[in-house]
Image 1 (tube, rainbow, N blue to C red):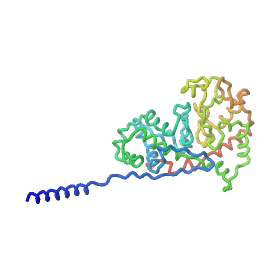
Image 2: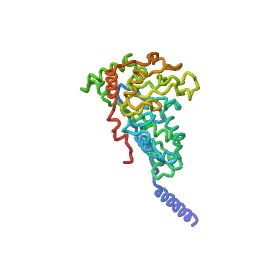
Image 3: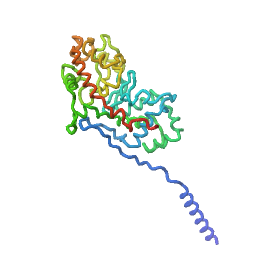
Image 4: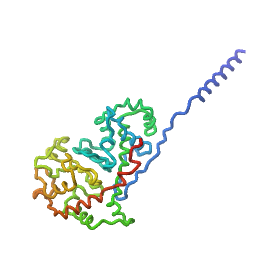
Length: 333
């Protein structure tokens, strides 16, 4: 009899355990979808960190965070508040455009942050925006999006930085008229004025290509371009090296038509003013860059016609596809 009751108890226990097992719903599955980034063949190979591969889920999360004011400590602004797509992810002010930053390893005008996109995006979240992680943790949707992107609902500055970096790597501009002109399979040609500007740009006549050469139209380095006889601190603020006084980050000239005002202090409102500066307004200083070979004579001294040609070429770098691309726009409307 005792054995019979033991048997019944065992059967009941097994049934209870089995019933409870059946009642436990399966947990979410972490299965990110790899995303191959599309960029022109003549661009440098894009180096993607092995610990932050690009995925559909990671890019979506980064895109949401980029456009959501929740990232700001007071929910007062989003990344996209200052980095507006219609203006090549810049805004009227001394805002460096977010364009082809996947190929950069130094960020901000004075190089305050150097390294990977992950590093600058983590800095933006933790130090600039001072994101309140608890607000994201309490959000009804974000923990789930973090799990889909990184396999954990734990929300950290590191994961925010990684998500933003994944989205930033999709901000690739390579569809300007100049890009199409370079493709042998397309019947796109520069006008006479644009081609004359091209010739000025890529020769010593214009002296532009030393800092803005290559397909990215920036060397991603720091230069004192002769703006002032007594220049500002620039990179010196970070390095404390007197040789770095007046050296600022070289911005890309892609979409330059859309990103006024110009220079690190926004002193020039138009491209015409910028060209006038390089033509007649250069200043000598102890740290002026050796590449500014015409600083001793005040500039490159272009004629009015040559200035027009150069501006015509610069406008061929405008990428209207980039500034209208739906997958780079806000995901919230």
